[in-house]
Image (cartoon, rainbow, N blue to C red; front, side, top):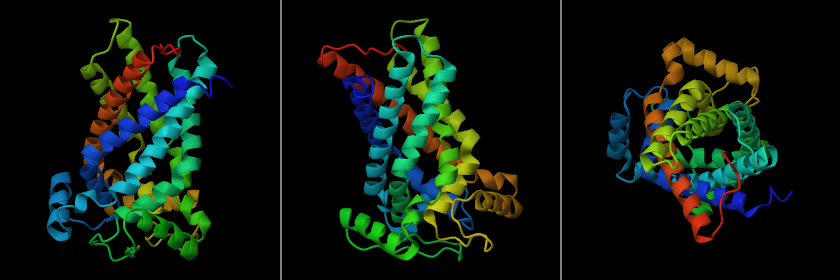
Length: 312
């Protein structure tokens, strides 16, 4: 219990949350382009920069940052939960010994499940808010309309979803999200593994080392799991026409139905529509996030006169 409630786990959680918020703010427009490419199937522009230019031209200069506050709020909570759970479980399991790739994968998977179950409602709401006011090419999409500014709009979105679709709609896309816990699990497995290999050759990692291994780890995880991320975005938005025989959002049947429809209409590469924007955004975001995370944890432990008890 002491390891779970330790000061070290709290430091890692706060540093992870701050790092992710910083990185997402810098690269947020790329995430906006990625989401449009995933959800709006009939958009003709295929490249990230062309989609961003279209959005700015049709919806205004600040449109690429639409939904920034709910995304940052969700990301802060999500990464706090993930980093806290990951580091607490690792401290309990490893107990001062060297970790292994297998242990990193298992701990990352469990931390991901806990994170998904606790924070999915936040991600459902911020997906709706990011797409509010968007100009879609796909006539099957029903636009969203939430009132108020920032906090008020967030609360109104929660209220409308519960009122119109039921409270379980807040967990739309949970099933693919649970499958997608392999994404951060794979990411952390490669990140921790590459980090251990580099630390065998040198005493300390440079900023460039952390940035590069963070980018490599995220690129691998994103490419492997991207088709499921596309389905996850569609289900979270919740305004597409789904399989009429099964309206249960997030069920295995609808996941397979959406994957099949995507392949039938756009070919196998349709599963990877928006991957360029996703890789550009997530790889750069993850690399910067890990850099801020490592520097912040190291600085905090130094200022407090403490040393991280967990050997990586």
